[in-house]
Length: 141
Image 1 (cartoon, rainbow, N blue to C red):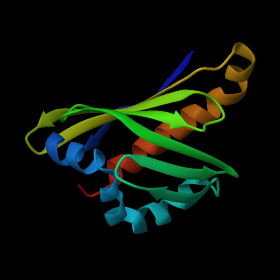
Image 2: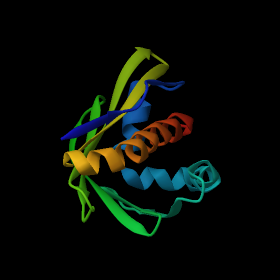
Image 3: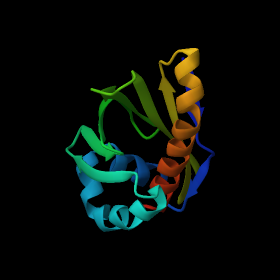
Image 4: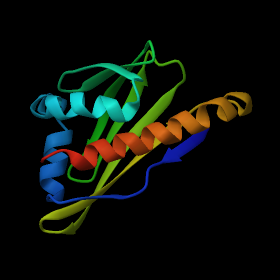
C-alpha cells in the first residue's frame, strides 16, 4: 500500500462552499472552461473529462480512470474509489476551515501497489495528486 499526499492548499472560500461544490460532481460543469485551460498544466496527459453527480472519468495518456464517490462526510471529506482502474486506489479530499471565508484542502491517494510497481508509479502519482490539488484550489466556489 502506497500513500501520496498533496501539500495543503488555501482556498479563499468557506469550508461549506467548497464542500457543497465538490460533493456533487455535476457542479464541476460550471468550471469546465477552466479545466480545459488547465489541460496545458498536465502537459498533454489529460485527454478527456466527464462526470455525473457521483463519478468522474478522466482519460490520461490513453487510460480511462473512473473515480466514484463512496462516502461524503459533510463539510470535511469526500472519499472516492477507483473503478476499472489499472491499480486499486482510493482518493479523498479533506477540507478544513481556516476562517469563515477561507478553507484549506488536501488531496490524498492510497494505491495498492507492490514494491516493483511503487518505484514506477510513485512520481506520476505524487505529481498527479499535487496537480489535482492545485486545480481544486483554483476553482471559484
